[in-house]
Figure 1 (cartoon, rainbow, N blue to C red):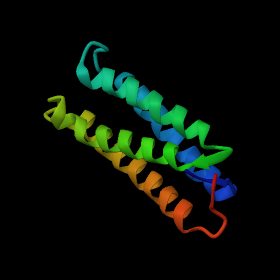
Figure 2 (figure 1 turned 30 degrees about the horizontal axis):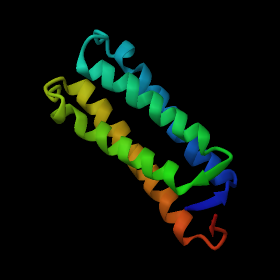
Figure 3 (figure 1 turned 90 degrees about the horizontal axis):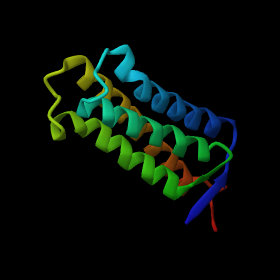
Figure 4 (figure 1 turned 60 degrees about the vertical axis):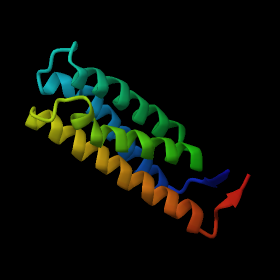
Length: 122
């Protein structure tokens, strides 16, 4: 397992993931979805997971946190087709954009964690 003490740029990246998680969590309300739909349930659960995992990574980044957020981001991006709400264009767009943004931020954090000279094994 790798870890790195976070610097200012790490806090910004993890802060963006917190923001994206909160945005996904709130998406059912601003997209006026019924809370009984699979899209709303997915947004609530995955948005909360992304935000909580990113908050844990604010002070110190571990590789497992970034891998977990990467996996959740991939699921969020694929969920419209897997759960059958791809015909809801705005909901699908929110899931794909937020999911791929989380994937990109987590991927960059993992790259930095393994390529950074400050990274160390724990």
